[in-house]
Image: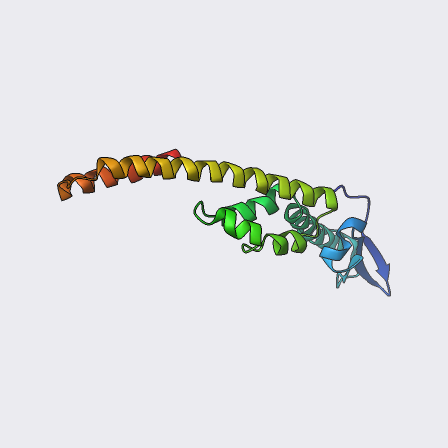
Length: 168
């Protein structure tokens, strides 16, 4: 949360108004350089109460913008939608919208580089895991190259899926 720097209320024409400057690096995402609103009261104690409500909204919006610009959050959005079987093809072609997510977050160049590094690390990990799984599936395929009782196979499948889910 930001630090309040005194009053954000001013009396104009017998009515109090809220005015707070948006930090410079948040202006583009916020959409304006300052937050101004009429507090619709001429009573100072009521104006202070209303000021606090708007301050909470203001701080929440700044926190949302800050979180949306966090390289780890942006990278998390990208990696969340990746699938092991299509990872390398789609990432290399930009098919998962990674560029759009990075651009919409309005990251600085160092933050963009951080996102790309996180995603690259993730893709290497998932790619290595995919290769291991392919080897495991080949081994399992060799075991099941002979007919297996359907009930036994269904129990095996259920156990394997349960084990895999418990690992993630």
